[in-house]
Amino acid sequence: MRLVEIAAFAVRGLTANKMRSGLTTLGILIGVASVILLIAVGNGASSAVQQSIAGLGTNILTISPQRAQQGSTVKPLTTADAAALVGPDSPDVKYASPVVSAQATAGYGGTSYAISQFIGTDPHYFETTNSGVAQGNLFSDNDIQQARKVVVIGATVATQLFPGVDPVGKSMLVNNIPFTVVGVLAAKGSSGLQDADDMAVAPLTTTQNALTGYGSLTQIVVQARSADALPNAQAQVTTILNGRHKVSQTADYRILSQDQLLTARTATTETFTVLLASVAAISLLVGGIGITNIMLVTVTERIREIGIRKAVGAPRSSILGQFLIEATLLSLFGGALGVAAGMLGTQFTIAGIKPVLVPSSVLLAFAVSALIGLFFGSYPASRAAKLRPIEALRHE
Amino acid sequence: MSPVIEVRNLRKTYGAGDTAVHALRGLDLTVEKGEYIAIMGASGSGKSTLLNILGCLDIPTSGTYLLDGIDTGDFDEEQLSLLRNRKIGFVFQSFNLVPRTTALANVELPLVYAGVRRAQRRERALAALDLVGLKERTHHRPNELSGGQQQRVAIARALVTSPAIVLADEPTGNLDTDSSREVMAILDRLHASGRTVVLITHEDEVAAHAMRTIRVVDGRVAGVLV
Image (cartoon, rainbow over all chains, first blue to last red):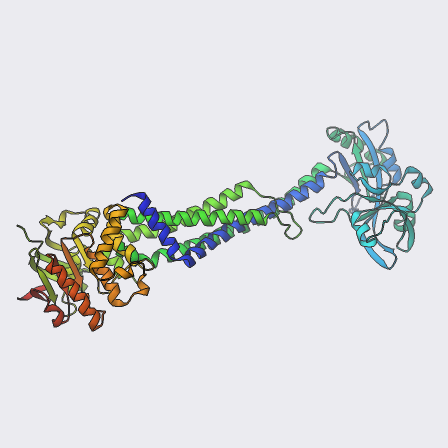
């Protein structure tokens, strides 16, 4: 009894019932593909968030006012604070841009659009936040001094308000105040949570005049001279602000470095990834149970055939070999198709997220389903092969 | 020369204790080479149990069974499968062909397990199918064959290895009169060509083909009709 003959029986067993083999393969395929895809989506979401944060630059500090607590007074962050942060006392600070932001409704022609972030700041802000200009120009210090009503809009705003029109030079209404569009920012893309291009930037003075008033700044964005200088810059900024705000115990402002932001966001996305991984684990389990089921049914309905084979003199080893090869072929074939389907699926954007394949998940999904298929394909067969022929033949 | 089958004090008990069923209670039987024997008995008499043990499909609780002079009691499962393959051809009442597999492949099956090479296998399987008059139906699957044809395929499978004995458990039990006649004619021819045939039947007509009829009652041989 040669191995080739046993393999031939296995192949014949599979082709003799194409429907059953097909369904088994499909079960394994779905199990493997869904695990690969789910993990890829989770991974894609977290890497998108990380990228969008990294895209802002790694040498930035964001200073924002702390909410007032009982028993403490809060001094607002002012333009003077921002100006004081750049000087001989803070050699590691390159720029400090005051930022005010508000929501604003913009209109052009017949259309109107709610911009989620309308920012007033100085020209250094663009460099600090890695914002390049795609069309037109940025505004200048002179525009700030003159409080000119000029605005640089994000890509989303440009497509929403000026479809098919070059926005540069056009006048758009922001809360019914006319602003001249001088430039369009290069698209940054969505971070999965918010659209970084849904924004407009105008000179600080203009924005305060027209929209926000002269209260506290929303933020001061500080750019350190380099990523390595960031801790020093943070210390210098703290010293200066503590002095200006006469802070004794609790600071009335909060400094967030890009690093901390990244850590916070990463923690969020990690939770997300864990959630998706547990969904994947459950689908692996469900897929595994499906494979188990089909394999058990397949073997059980063939116990009689096993009896026939034993009755004409098949040794146990050859029956075991046949079912082992059948299970191996099904598992490998279904698993390979599942890997292909899963990898194909990761080529598409799913719910705004570009999935990123995790190589180890491919291996895991494939190995687990192959092993499950092998075990539940061969274990019942081995039990059936141990039966006396007459017991197997009587099996209904 | 030793008999093909020699059975001494064969007992088979299913279950244990109060619920134990004694299918065979010390049965003795001797079958010489070239004999044609019919076993008759009421249902529950133990005749099927006897034939299953003779075919090495089941093992007795106690007693000895010498097949072709070999004591099968010493054999393990692996050696028994070899014995089933080389010495025994078994024909079932319900045919028991491998489903979705051609007649030819079904007949070749025992030869594959015997390790016969492909070319020779095909030749012998075709010869066996020719012997049962099914040369035209080699590539039909069981569900494309009538009951009589399926049983003839099963007989071809039983005799393709040239076994020492052909055992048939009510071979005509599921067949109409015409098919039964064909099947019995084939068994008669096998006997005529010198093979040992043991069959179980309910029908006197079928039993009449045999040289001897053994009546089994309550797990013992009650009488022999020559």
